[in-house]
Length: 172
Image (cartoon, rainbow, N blue to C red; front, side, top):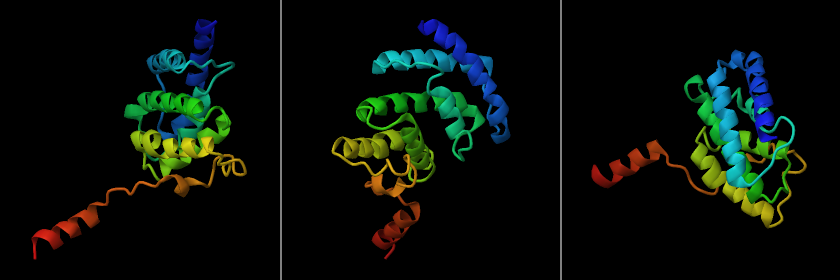
């Protein structure tokens, strides 16, 4: 059954090229096969099951207009986003809908994370999932949109501030 679902998914991923090409992103046949294979692997690793077309087409449409995704790493980025999505569906105990999680991921990726997938998974989504498990429900009213600043408790490195501090310490 999984093989049939994978075989049906590849054409849907390629069909999304009609929409995504206006953002300079397209998947090749090999990219589509790679994503189907990664989907199968991720589902096994996270012990999840998908019915229907799955999350990949939704990830494509949600993230294709990102300022941080380039053609050269498009398929790999989608594969990593898929891994992150399923990992956090588990972490969130399925309390957050697919749509809410996708919107939240995209908003964090574009704003706080500035395209950094490690920061998305390791900080923003980690803090968000802890909050949801503790009872936070603020995302429900906005379907995961508009809450980007709440889950960035870790100060980011600021190059200009670093340079100023160095000058103060060493060039007195």
